[in-house]
Amino acid sequence: MQTIRLDLPGAGLAARNDGAAGLRPEAPVPPRTPVQARLLTKQFGPNVILDQLNLDIRAGEFVALLGRSGSGKTTLLRALAGLDRITSGTLAVPQARAAVFQEPRLMPWKRAWRNVTLGLKIDQPRERARRALAEVGLDHRENAWPATLSGGEAQRVALARALVREPQLLLLDEPFAALDALTRIRMHQLILALWRQHRPSVLLVTHDVDEAVTLADRVVVLDEGRIALHLEVDLDGPRDPADPRFAALRTALLTALGLPPVAAPADAAPADAAPAAAAPAGPETTTGRTPR
Ligand SMILES: Nc1ncnc2c1ncn2[C@@H]1O[C@H](COP(=O)(O)OP(=O)(O)OP(=O)(O)O)[C@@H](O)[C@H]1O
Ligand SMILES: [Mg+2]
Image (cartoon, rainbow, N blue to C red; front, side):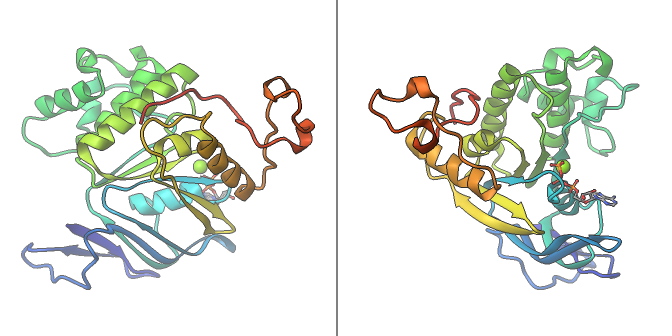
């Protein structure tokens, strides 16, 4: 595994590359934990956004990251992507990583397939792009201009652009937030299929608690610059938001986010149930049943 270590402040990048000429291996990172953040701090001027944060992500693990708006989720994701320098601490991440953001960020003057391989120096780029587009169900749109793609299609091209890089770490920053509910459910299914196929480690930033519980092995909550909660999601098979175990996880996460649990709808309660205020927590939103 190749690992970039960012030992800051001021140290720049030190590359570790097992077996590559000219690079001396540093302290080995356990291969089953390709992402290790230790005492990671990020400041913007005097504002401390990430405050000595620790986070591990295991190989092939799907982690969802929740947190209030402005809590630093994107800041953390950008640090993991290598887009921003951290202020202090250490961060070990696989070299092969790719990020997808809320907006697809396609170059409007390049056709879909060229967007997929943008910036890559690889053999047979068109064939590689075509294969990646086929994986997201868009091989028939390889020559399309971005302006002619729907929002969901454009986001799938962005996903193909990430896939073609064969990432060991896939970083997703609210990639479904701008999509309609039906497209979002389809994207959930697609992401899970791709994850099963390629098994990268995934960090998915989302505001949607149900989305997090539907997709992730583990949900973490960012608060006050640190990971305030880790919640393993050990639900077998298709995850059903109506399942009481799903509801319990939802309630725990909403509570960690500082939101009061939402009462079950009155008309769904049995006739002799307690008043709504005392009723057990029910679904906050209906995002539909998404097979895992
Ligand atoms: N380049 C920057 N310069 C200064 N402050 C920044 C910069 N980027 C982010 N911030 C600040 O850092 C804090 C965390 O921002 P971040 O975008 O990481 O939050 P977030 O959790 O992703 O929020 P949201 O859920 O709204 O996307 C915010 O207060 C933001 O204003
Ligand atoms: Mg954000």
